[in-house]
Length: 418
Image (cartoon, rainbow, N blue to C red; front, top):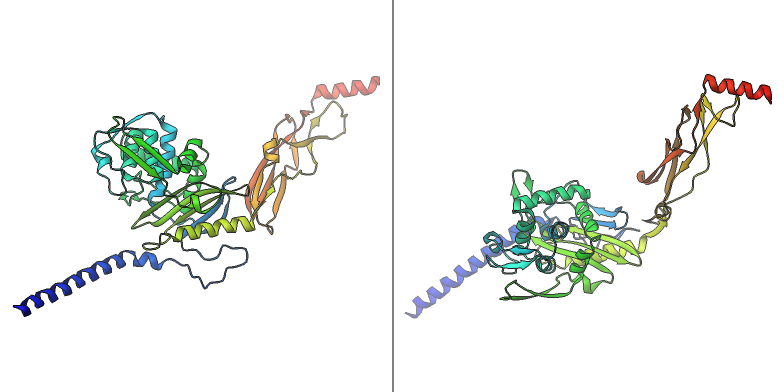
């Protein structure tokens, strides 16, 4: 009897070990390929003037003021981006509906997988309260409830998201879900790029309510019937790790890995950091390491320099031109004028010490009369590394009429009597 019991126990132990081992193998296989892509190596020396190795498969450090990319690692490669999607979900809701709108919870919203607030079908909430749930604790059910309220349906909201992404300047972004859960349809998979994600955050932080929500540490609210109360805390740990953090959003799915996007102002410099594929379990700390490394790099190597440089004066001959001050045989000229606002004159750009701005003044060699004051006759361009940073129209400073028979008669008459 004892031998039979021991045999059963031994068999059970072997079976459980096999099952748990199999589960571990399945889990390992799920993330093995993605984790193998992480190129970080602590033994690789950091190059002079670079942030060094990063864990993230894709990363961007952007100047939040100008939108210029200061550093990128595979920044144009499309990847799933998990809950960082909710930055766009939030800004769309803020731009399209008032915060005191009543949001009704559908069965679809209530059925969303973790992480969830625990919404129940038929409940109602203020939209503003749900936006705190969306951004502070990344609740997936909240995202769907918001999407259905703003867009009529998840599909309708996705159309608004993609339209807004294009408006912002995103070139390779396609969103299917408002919460960033991995999804695919006939047009492709839910994805963005590190560059596009940085652009979305740069756009979002211009909204004061977005900043207020994402800077909040703790928030409490109830449903409209006051039957349930919820207490939230902000999961953006960088708020307490680094000075100057304005906003941030984390994310994770099996396809996306850990993702993060944030805005941070340090020493008057505004940086946007975006990371995609920044490790898989159990490496959720990688995103903080990469973010701090990119911020340190930006602070150390970049400083603001004024863009504007006054060009030298110049004139352009006007063929067959006639002016009051000219006589027969004289040449007519216009002077180029650049109209620059005070904002453009004081505009600054984050640059490395060894970077230089190139200026070019491209003006027509000659003009044909008549020429009207304000007519564009050229362009004054500022470039950095071959990329156009700013461009200003050059316009004529006066009217120049075309030589006519009456003008010639007037000149002869004037010369004869004077």
